Image (cartoon, rainbow, N blue to C red):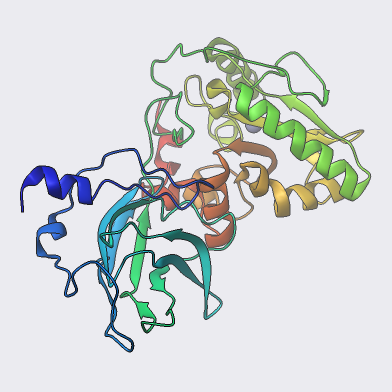
Length: 345
Ligand SMILES: [Zn+2]
């Protein structure tokens, strides 16, 4: 088959998250395309005819947030409905539906890992309901094993900052900062705009649910301020003790503008844990793209004692994944704990 014709046949792009299906973006032909063939010519199909879905390779491993392209052919395909289904609690649930083009072939580019906001699903399949003329058809199951990749770019939502992994460049300042529309207290109360908007929404929902007001007490902090802060703690408690609850200069998430220390109004932030607002935040922050970055009992992994007040904005996808999996950022990224760095100069 000529390459140009093949490209046209695979022209359709489908995304699981988009409401509308885009048919205009050309995508690369997957390696499986050449192996696909249609057992029926286009046109009416005899009653009771065999029907099938070809393509949609079963096992996959992927980096979360990336699209998955796979070639799919339905025979007979003309005008058939195609459903993308995910397995939720042992049942197949349709996430998305489209109508196959006349030739019955698709290149489906689907964001398979952007679904944890609904449920932590890893099993997917395609289903074509039967019609008066043909039987239903189902594809093999695609099991998606997902990995997340830590970024070293402090502008990325997936940036990982630990005692071992400092902010680069060391004097990084976010391009834009904004104060969230909520109660604030102190000098450093700005965040990256997306994080600020999400935190304001979180605070509003927290107050609605608990009757307690959430207060932002620390957002973006520059490297120089962190240096003075750590030195102050170190002179009071000793450097080793200080490093269990305070980051050294250039190693604070606060420098990215994606970390927010919050508390309940009238409560010192160090006593936030166990308050109604804290309990609510721990349970619901993920819906707003935030996670409690340093959970109780996680010092071996994160290098820090539990800090129920320190929230980190990672975006809704990763936050949902962390919530459902119960993992810390270090675990999701598969990186070594940052504890060793505590002893380094
Ligand atoms: Zn903090």
